[in-house]
Amino acid sequence: MKKKNLFTTLFIVGALLLSFSSCKDDENVTASAASLTATAGDEAQASTINDQILSEVDTYVSANAQLVKPMFTGAVTSVPLITIENTGTTATSILKKITIDFGTTGFTGRHGNTLKGKIIVNLDLRLLSLGVGSSRTITYDNFTINNISVTGTNKIIFGGWTTDKHPFWSITGENVITLADGKTITWKAERRLEFTSALTTFWGEGYILTGSASGINAEGKAYSITINAGNPLIGSTLYPYVTKGSVSVTIGQSTGVIDYGDGTQDNKATLTYSGVTYDFTIR
Image (cartoon, rainbow, N blue to C red):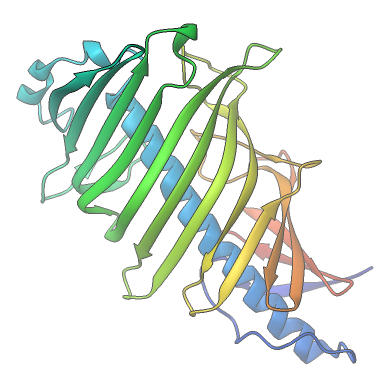
């Protein structure tokens, strides 16, 4: 298999998508590869933003969310302003609404991100089956992360534990992400997140991620991405890049495979498209 350097990054569109061509000349392959890589970057950016928001939310809304105290609101230098409302009960659940207000000047989160605006979390805390089925539905009010605007809805549902006693969640999201340059990414995802290390009751650090996503990339083109079930994405919430796994990326008639490596912590990946493998750097 041939191998070339692809001088593009995940977050820079190198060229417009060209239709898959039977002649497969280098120019067409490179242009399509650049578009696929940039699209994978858009999705990776959306996914990373989503994952870091979920991690940030978990910092303030633990599995024992009913114990989060309003006294935290007096320490805005270390935590954002937290408002808790009891919104009802059912035969199986306690319902709560937690508003996390990061303010308008910029709050530094656990990953070093600058957060502004509000995240609203509606909780359904299941009383039975050790919390299986508990959910968090997340919406946003004038919220930005590193000056990137996020709107829409995300939901995570606790599924229980694997035979290895790893907690797992199903995660869905429909978001519009507006980048600093004004371009937008429309992102819809259905994923399964399993934590494998540094486990708390309902959260962790090391993870395995499977599922799919689709949307409109920053250049206005529809795409779909599927994590390869036999080679799921592996990483850590403490490290910004996926370190292992592969995904299939499709735009129109063009499909490529992004491979994130062997588990080494770095920002390197490859794209294989039309029999050619390209190296690139994730940013």
